[in-house]
Amino acid sequence: EASGVADPARIAELALIEPMLERDGVLVLADAASVQARAADRHVGDTVQRQLDGADLLILNKADLVDAAQLAQTMAWL
Image (spheres, rainbow, N blue to C red):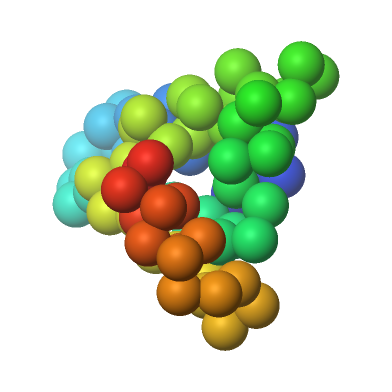
């Protein structure tokens, strides 16, 4: 589990060091209301984009906080 400005794909690669562990995939949780703004932020945007790019599975949360049009647009962007 990683949060904030972590790089989950790189953390998951550490599992390859331990022979008893197997990497099944990287799951990234994205906030429907703010993921695009965070990805465009000059301070954390590169990190957010790296997190999204490293995901094997994206879960979009807080979908109830945006209207249907914004949700559809965010899903298309992702």
